[in-house]
Length: 495
Image 1: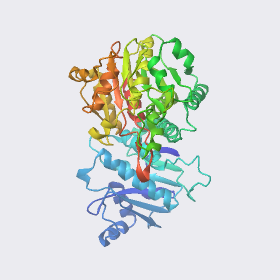
Image 2 (image 1 turned 90 degrees about the horizontal axis):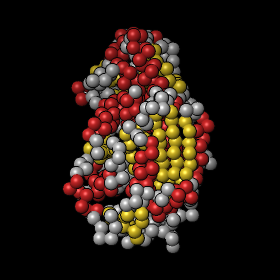
Image 3 (image 1 turned 90 degrees about the vertical axis):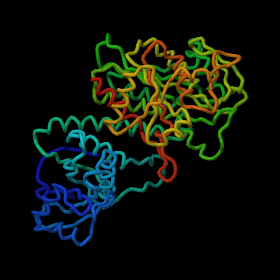
Image 4 (image 1 turned 180 degrees about the vertical axis):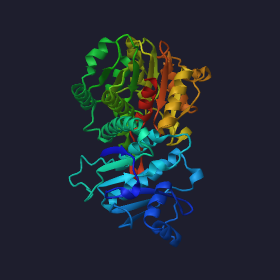
């Protein structure tokens, strides 16, 4: 998709379609009023007849509107103006995008930046518009022999801004949003691939390709022999049950002086999780290809970081494996020794994400990070607690928690903090090892983070549990690319 920003009157645009908003009940937005004036009340007459009420999710495509130079005018319902929110703005953009893509308009000029969203400026609206359009148009059809192509798909969008004084700021917002969208698409593509294609070896190959595309990005792949030399007994215990060898993928982006401590992202890269000996139910087990969405989000963030040439040092670490049932797989009751020297009693082999993450987190100590953030589809308990709207944040450093929460609010990729109190640590007690890998029925998301916290005492750390936000089920099944936007906003704020 090609995006541009410019200022100008809607009735003077020579384009396939001009997009303007209509508020409920039957009230014109500022740009719609300009078209109505140029057309001698054409829009007002339509609205009075009840052709469109302005409800959120409504749209009406008009042809040959008098007094305009565009082929079409698309009216988009915005709901009640006083009830507008960040989430409703995304719905408005998505509604317009679908109508345009299905209506044959290959290009359009959006005037939806004249909608007032409390506390948000034109640059933010430009950014959100691009992120939403790209998300709405995303399709994963690489593996289909016959693709459902639109005859005349939407290819170009011009975003109108109120004043030329805002042009420079909005162009920068456009560039940033496009890079983030590219990162989100990369995360979606990797996550949507099936487990027979996207193996740990495949992921390692994709990291090597990123290395070749970006001068400031360097990739190192640790093989199982390398991990054995590092005594990563916890990570390797998970891969023992699979015919696919584990990989520890390390991507280093150097955008600042070497003296600057890096931000480190650690993403869970379970390319398929059958649960091991504690095997999962058959229903929806196909969705366990999404157990590497945390790792995919690290790929997306590293790519976007390199595209934007951010003046930061950022390292992405992705421990990748499968978790399969096999004669050599972990068994409930087994005790393994992690890279840190701490021993773990494995009471449930389906709590494997923390087993690969803990060794990766210990490995990150060598980077002397400014902060470390792990991203993982870690617990079903997170979905019980927060549903599918917010990812959970748990951290050993309050300022880092606030940075992540604020970044999520800014870019509409929200999170919610859960407590990481010492009171929960005793749930991991074991009679036979330093800790168990599960903490019982209560507070599953918190005890999983408590487990990881035992490997992060040497740096500032936050854990993002994205089990409820990384993908959608049902008719719209597919990866969301979250939390790439939050991670990128976090980095941009640091710049």
